[in-house]
Image 1 (tube, rainbow, N blue to C red):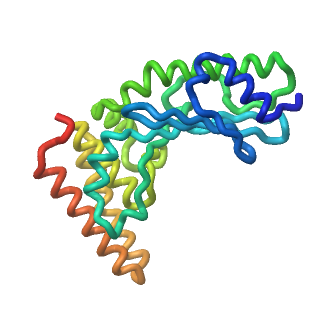
Image 2 (cartoon, rainbow, N blue to C red):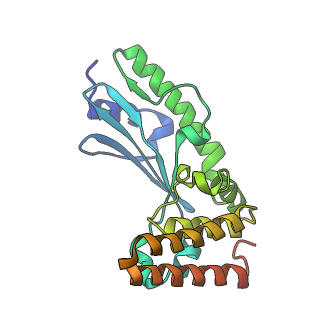
Length: 224
């Protein structure tokens, strides 16, 4: 079955649950955007070979959290920062259905879309409203131990993505705060050993880390 992005966009525009999103056709993707009071939401479908349709990760910017976290990032580390988290459908939406399908018939497309609408409805009712709750967010970040940290993506590159997780865990009063704090310190020290030529970079990592920890442990929790 030959699918086109224009045909898919038309289908989505006719469905009530996706009508509220701004839909843009990119080179190989169909991008969805929704700007709400407390959240900015983005997700997309990738269409390859005219039939392989894949639902990509949900990208969420939690406005209140980012507004409180970004001032804790020292200026020299701002280029490591991004104001989003990624929520993987396979991580929080439990289903045996695969959202990457080689669509060969209208029936298969209908089945794919039906399962997607169920998934999106779950996100809109069970996930998006709760992401502004710092304890829910901390439970999400802390759902894996530090050694599995790559399973949860909160935006930015090393070390800012770890700094962001540490702030989420601390403000969410999560038990993994000390674990992530201690292991991040060890990673910075290991980075210094593995990259001795990066002395200034390591100094800034440590400076940013110490500023963050001092603030988290000495200033009131802004979410209380």
